[in-house]
Length: 157
Image (cartoon, rainbow, N blue to C red):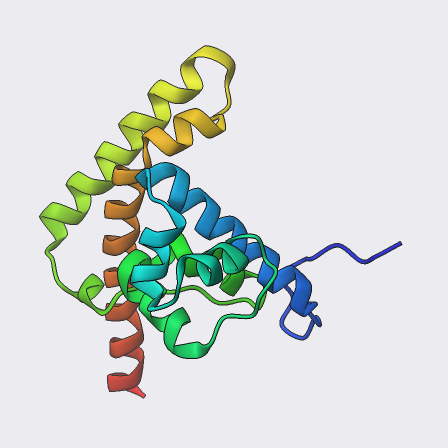
């Protein structure tokens, strides 16, 4: 029996799981955006066939293609795989914004979540996909606040 993939700091994560996870992210992006493998390949600067191999977890992606995917799709692309090694991608522009907009973004997310749990007490995958814009907006403001805390800790040493 294999140990569960708990996000511990020093757990070895199999390369096959990393490739599958990135592939699953590409599959979700393809589905959500109505994209083709050629569209994915254009972003990654690879052929349609190569993009299809990445999407199905059958090929390892070079770092330049990975970074192009991060630039285009940010956390939608990279965060599931990065979570396997205890990390996440947060865009630098997360530092932009103000507390008023952050509060509004969090309230919008909470309103969506409240509506989703009213019927059965859970947020299903369809409801989660529908609230992606609110979730991403709130996440950027949370990252902005985390960055402020980090900078304050550095400044006060």
